[in-house]
Length: 413
Ligand SMILES: [Zn+2]
Image (cartoon, rainbow, N blue to C red):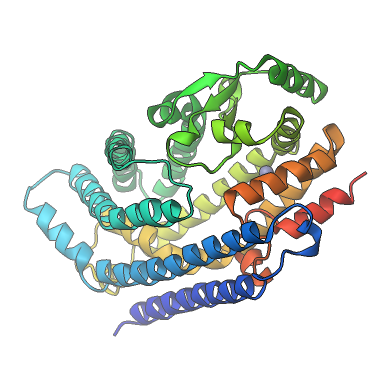
């Protein structure tokens, strides 16, 4: 067995072990705190609501164990199990020219992966979400979504992959710099295009028409020095009763989006506080910081691929007998998460730091106590656990645990 094969199997085993161990810890922790609402929430959340959150969390975690083990086995099947090789040989029969042969291999892989993933998505939506009363989707909405996603993927991914593969083959030794520029431009274009062109394919957006709420929001926006590019309400209730709010887009395409479910559960002041938090992300330039981190990481990744793909064992040790540019890219995309998982806690740490900054901003511009009220309502309605395992949370969570977050807000003046 080649060293690369051994390193890959060991790394896969380590990453799987760490993730399963953290999930187990979290299940145990949530279960241990199931019988009592934490003191900080005892007057705001009922015991049955707390227990629903614990059960919902546990069911989701148990399912993620199955998904993790299955996806690890699948990764082995695609690589050293010879799956990619079979796909490659099958598509080679059609005798397509470069880069189209590679593009079809990519699309074939996406398609097979999508089909394998379908039962998991169905189970999540129609079993787990249904069981806890969150699912509002129907089988036809679900299937239409899948078809739309597939068509969108074909339309967007085909030219992008073709361009990337063409550059890899023709741009010389420093192809990865060219590909990086393409990738960054593409990412920025998508961020800009998403709110206006992609999101409306799946949801209806209408301008907020509640006059009083609009007035409250406009005052907040001018207080914080933001121009109003449009406040939209999205029909999130079409698929799920989970509520949310987000900021999206870039430049003149910037939008504030509220799920209709969120507007139903929060009052005007609470919505203002939630929005102030979102504005905090903008004020602190969190989105730009994330783009910079993504840019640096993708540049390092591509340079690494540029170096790795010169070595034949990189392919053969991972189950592909004939080296090609597209296989180099596919292998890298499939295998690198096994090694890059250790960046996850670092990314999560910075994300939580940003959440604190946004909360503190909201406390200044709006009101900390109102934001606490809004958050508690959201924790309750989304059945988020209040008692995650600290280690699991440190590794995975983009938001601070409920108790830490509320304590920080209460300490604000
Ligand atoms: Zn946030």
